[in-house]
Image (cartoon, rainbow, N blue to C red; front, side, top):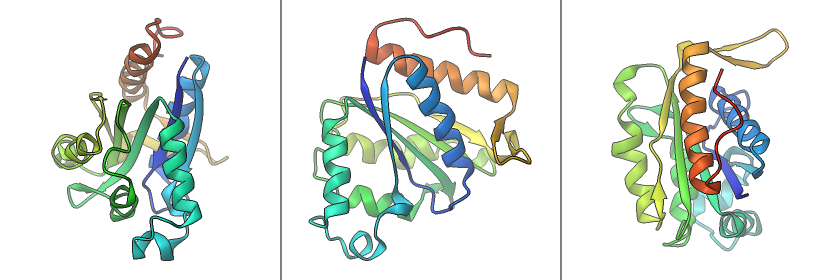
Length: 184
């Protein structure tokens, strides 16, 4: 099974994007993969914004990417692009940080007008970082994501099923084994 790093580009502490990434990480873990995560918002802002790639926290992320077999990158979409916070991290990565890795891009956003942001804004950057393969990404509308009173993110059934098909396909591409069970 693969070692997978998830990267959240959401600037918010309470984030639908992070909630989706938690669902995805759990599904990948249930399939037998080892999953770890990085939330860019938790990195020290001064080195991140000053472009200090030698900062220990930034180096730690670079090392985690290097140790992973695959990466899942998730971001909210603002103004038809991934977040500036995620861009700050991607700009600090070595030129071929994703060399030999499969990458799954995920996004959340408020309108279907932003669906193509994965293919036209995020995918080219992931490819330029040397990804061996960037999987078909998945975009979830904010309206299909709701919070329960206990703080758990719930994904509308049809959207959850489609997301899990994408995640299971990504998982299968890494392990060559069928997914756990049909997405429900």
